[in-house]
Image (cartoon, rainbow, N blue to C red; front, side, top):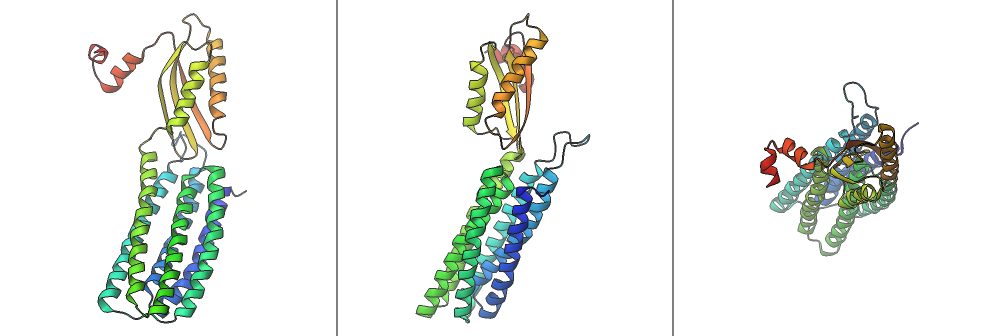
Length: 306
């Protein structure tokens, strides 16, 4: 059975291909940079959505002997690639806009162009609503990136429509180029967030501070845990990884310690039921945080204690 994420990428790529055919035909025929820019963006959308489909498919594969933590980070790689592609498309749009200003190219077929953009706006609006719903349900970074990309399309399509309307009223073709230039800049700006999130995930950035604080609170409030330290977290987009050391009574039976760990893990997993969790507790008879810090940074223990 197809997962919601994969179904979302199939739907988004299908819509993008359909819009490409319409806008590319109108954009080339009319000579409108704004419409052509929108067509190129939709073409990239379809390519990226297809790529995302295979990225999600790979990320959902179960861990094996070689990839023992799974392949979830493929989603982060996909987000970085998608953001880069969006940036390149924005640069190309800027290039076309500048070229139109310099060569003073005329815009024709304004009425068909307006109809095409109105249809594109409606189709993109309903697609964005659908993708945001799936992104909220799954918390998939790839679907979030896809939704953000189509949201920028929604605004850029509206800008194209306004540009065409102004050209129709004023007869100034430079308006089309200026709007195309603005769309290109906006697209590049929107790509920054996508690339940043993907890179942070690849660099094992910690979970959000609120979640980390809640994990710390769960450990602090357990009556049988003396203290905790060395709490570390990360995510690959679909699985959250948590490690921590918890200090227990030195004479506690291993069976008791395991029971406490199970209780803590159960409460942590309840923080976000849309994600898989891989929780690794470590049992300590005393607080050895300073020793761990010394080992991590390769410093003598005496220097760390200073």
